[in-house]
Length: 615
Image (cartoon, rainbow, N blue to C red; front, top):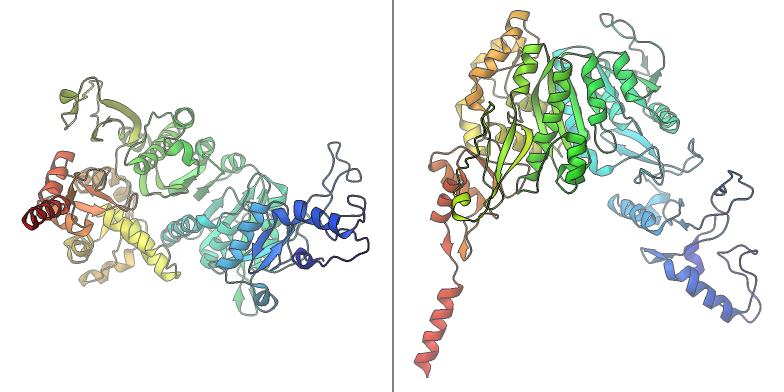
């Protein structure tokens, strides 16, 4: 294969020369000055640079022929492309080549390191006829096509930035695997199959993994990835749940099993029951919620990942109203607003199936919104969940907010006085939104234990922040507080916290489902612990800072709020956000009390006085 970087060192001669990057029928042989002009205007003008090499665009028939409109390959045309100097992959677009080279830089790969030990291998063509590279994440190898980052051009889409999402989902499944064994889990949108393969490879016989995708190319790629990770592909019917699955061994290593099927997500969720369902489509997941709640088992878990950040973060309000049935505006707490909107949509879908939910986890980061809920069967639980869907009053001037009370009477009074001091109306109704808690402390503690067990160092700080946020407490009070010494009941399951003191005798009941009577009293347990829920929403310390004043450091400000008698914690939604039960007026009063004036005015006054004395 020709390397386009070498042609930049072309030396002209007196004879006729043909272009080394174009076929003969495209550019005929000419003299050196015309050839140099051709190279400068066409090839050298759009080059991609890497480690001193210039990869010029190539028009030779190195790639597959692009078919014509009639589908005939013979009458098609060759596509211009670039050759990667590291792995020799041909890529059509310059932006894709730059992204491809950045991945090599992030992995520390150069031309010299590729010839030695490199994780990106040039293998035989994939089912689509293109070369692929191998990527390793959490001990699982997957094959990736060169255009895997663009879902419009590739069925086997893979996003490296969603690694945090995949690890959070894995930890939630690992927690459920401690309660029941085996767990019937479904990865409804397989793509490369990375998530389902991680489940099967690390949880082994504790789970029975089913990976589905509607694309034939994805299904073939998933089966190849199963062979790459020594996972047996099960294409037949499942054995009954009570019997133990076969667990063969090859050279002392247990063989994991995964079922791979080409099927629509709605179809398989209507046909079969599951204990754990993960929905991660490209965009919104509202079209699959009804099917997900139809056959999910009692006390099962459904995780929903939404990547339509344009509609979730109030950039496209019309799309938000169409998909989620909510009216929202851009606020300082827009990420938590998006999480509560997704939970409200999930709760309505569960209520249509006479089921309620308990939110275990809600995370909103830059690229996605992840919601993990536990399913509670019965109309009583469905009614309790539906009562937590409320409208939100939001002041567009000071951004104070409060949930409306249940009932038909409208209470549009806000704690702020903006409606009286400013002309016109300043308040707007948002929602309906989920007004209940977004976290379950016991579940998050067990997720942290699973992250430590499987060496997921990347998400451990995030899970710890979620634990502090769920209890609305700082790090110091969390470690030494009395809440760290008690057991917690979650959906009829006794949960042992990380601190195992004198209650180690009850550790045998950890992770086991209790009897039906205790499970039925779970709703009453929720009502009695309602006062312990974290306060909704947060305030940004930068948004409400006073002009001309230097505000205190964030950790100091948290201490001042705690000393004032308020519950306070950091939040993962905003690095400058403070979750507290104080109103905005109380928040500003504490901030004003401990803010000091800037030194600019005082220094200017002293300078003017000294100048007068000198004169």
